[in-house]
Image (cartoon, rainbow over all chains, first blue to last red; front, side):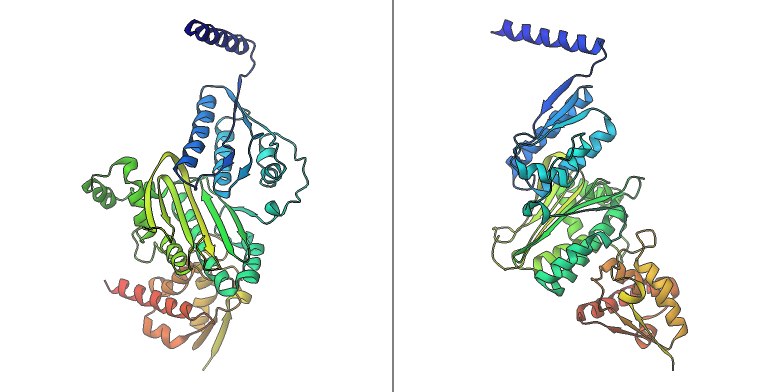
Length: 322
Length: 109
């Protein structure tokens, strides 16, 4: 048996060598998790991270990757936003080395086409977007603090949830993208934010992500923060959950007294709206506020670092536990 | 006595957002420099009408009003005597004055 495996490995190495000699690229096929979700718990994060590592390893080794969406059955905004960020990053670092296979599921294909993932990976847009589960999602992106792209979504929120909820949400969203501009892209030319939003008469959901400097890395630029973490025995990525939690409490990189209100405002708004939830993922840490649990506020570590920051809000309009 | 009214949604933007000019087109700094400070210089009383805009993030409000203290040397008393805030959302008014008050305290330090 061992000999058979060794023979196969040798054959495989030989084939790769011949293909390389012939100037042909080698391709490996990697499937994302069937349920493309990140926020649901440790298990889903591990599956997502395994997929990410597998693609990264192939690309870094000079092997092209076919992302096989054929078995994908459910897409969630957090997973989709992260996937889109990864694809954008991989395409920039490894041009021409990514391809894809269409999903078998019609709804999944419509969604991946709606957000241009399939087209970015060289596949034709062959579906008409008809499904309500796709159309109800607003996919927005921008590079500065201009809330114009949110107009349609805000009007819908005002219609379904009233002006007060809409104004509160607007404050949080404008602060979130102000934070991106001030903190995430402070020392880089790259910029941009991506958002998924939806609203019904029962809930509002908003996910925003950037791919800039993370909350922990910007906070650690300050020597006093570094010293504070050292004193508590928190070094490197082990400090990330604590740093994110402290940003929610109002600590910022700039330490200017009139700054640092963004995340705190979002958190307060979430707490004020009954049974609403907030999740913040940045580098190797996360902070969550989920009412109804023994400890509504929790923070912890994630294995594979999130590049940038991912914010997830669920505003419950019914007051019921979600 | 001269009085002016600034209706943010009509005169500036229904989508005010961001702190500095570099953030985006409708920032707190832009509102302060283009409309609010010129109106304060010109008029004895300035009514700032917030209704009709989508909302106001703290960065926008702090820079627009707190910035009057930091950048234009105004005090809480002077501004309270000059500015009238018109809004259906009462928390906006109290937040504006707390930002001005914080900026005044900070300047004294």
